[in-house]
Length: 252
Image (tube, rainbow, N blue to C red; front, side, top):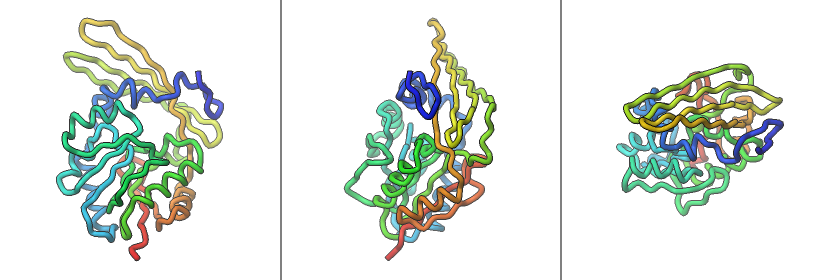
């Protein structure tokens, strides 16, 4: 058992992105990646100033956004989970997919767009980690390039005690994930219970607690500004209530 910010967590590596990676797409099957990708492309064209076609998706997961973005852009994906990347490589043969941490990865090129979506920065637990991440995004942008970041829930909107259920059923596997939320100070915790049942086999149960830092939108803008990007916050975003954090690198 590991203790983070006063919360007990059953493991140090999030099961959702590692052991349960093969079921991730089943659980988020209602997410419209095609529509979201079109919205992202429109933002990149409207706000970016570098005018190129190189796109880096940080915390790319199983590559669902990249599968659509690749039609218009030369895409690269990076993720901290080997297991998620394994799924992405099956989906995206020939696309460069790299193992790396959003806070510290180093590539030998820069991009017109750096995206980080589905509240992946919400897995960070300190402002210094956010600052390092935003600085790393800026480092990998061309002059005039744009960062598009989907943040975690605003502290004013976070609901302690909220319970949510996702399920998926196919001929070979049934997956259920129930989540409940709680909060201690600036840290949120989402407590997950998973049930995985395969045809002809027993049902397995897993637990995890996902800890995240709750940061007001104006503070996120300041942190991104401090990383060398001209930042602003846009509503609405891709996921209800979360908005998008936009950072433009000086074109000169």
